[in-house]
Amino acid sequence: MKTKNLKLKVILFALVVCVAGCSVNKEDENHESIETISPIPFGKWKLINVTTPFVGESNDYSEFNIVYDFGIDFATGNLLKVSGEIEKIELYRGHSIGEHPYAIMCIDYEDGYEYRLTIDTTTYSYQISSEELKFDNLPLDGSIYTLVKF
Image 1 (cartoon, rainbow, N blue to C red):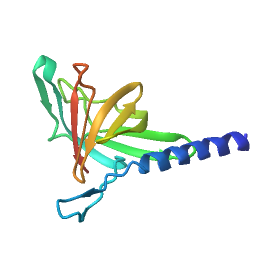
Image 2: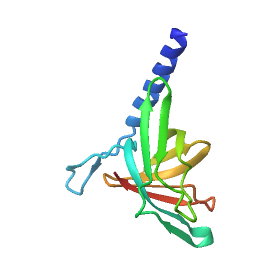
Image 3: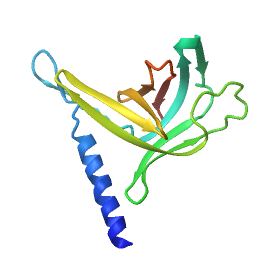
Image 4: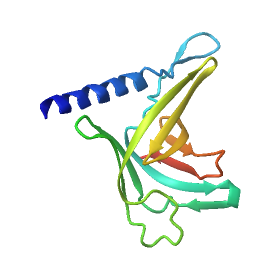
């Protein structure tokens, strides 16, 4: 049993190192380094909007405290905990309250990187800044999720 747990920890550690290796260091026109932002959305983020362009729907959740907490545990793996009171929301389009496994993947192209986030079994492209996280499963006519750092 200890060998199995050790293997899992080694695999998860290697995953974190690989993802962290997808650097987002950039240089401005003077070749000076610009502040690096981690491409991994660890920590707490507040869901503020879910837009579904295909049906012309936009749902504003900024007045609700719906929190997406991206954590990592070397024993259990990456775990997203969604919390908040959604009972009062008529059309809630976010992820269900509770725990969801997630994974991060970085695809290295010649002209840059693309980051992918898989929550449960759905894979999204995503963009992250120091204050905002957006992910979507377009072009599959899916939704665009907008979150802000909590």
